[in-house]
Length: 165
Image (cartoon, rainbow, N blue to C red; front, side, top):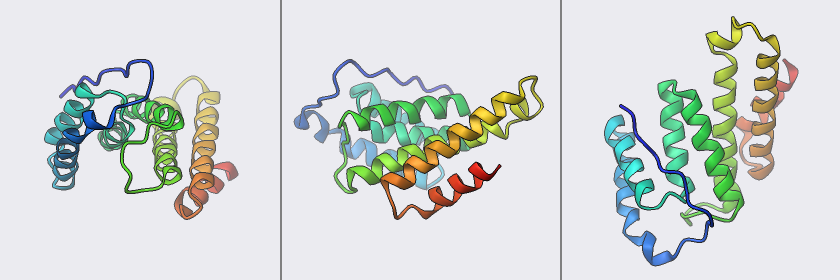
């Protein structure tokens, strides 16, 4: 299944009233993912982004699903776009502090880059520097996640482990 996610338009200021109707759509997609209905979740997150592409949280959810599916380039693109939106002040949900949500986006990027580094194409590829670059980028992403959310011990430990390699 190929879910097309629109690129966000310029400017990340989103009127509140526009977002109210998207909340139930987003939560239905979260519930579908929790219940193992991956296709339904992908469609739900894509539908939210089709209506408002400047949201980071559905991108983070898509990125996590893509990571689980091994669609690493798609996962990386969603994580990077979520980080860009969040760093511009575009957090949608208010359930978690901004630093925690941004930390989660950085951790997602780190996990995606770490997985790319362990892929056969990189491990057995012709460019040994590519592995080192991905590991360094993953370590930096996990380190940033831990800086943003000091309670994220997993990111801190993973960053240290990757830096030791």
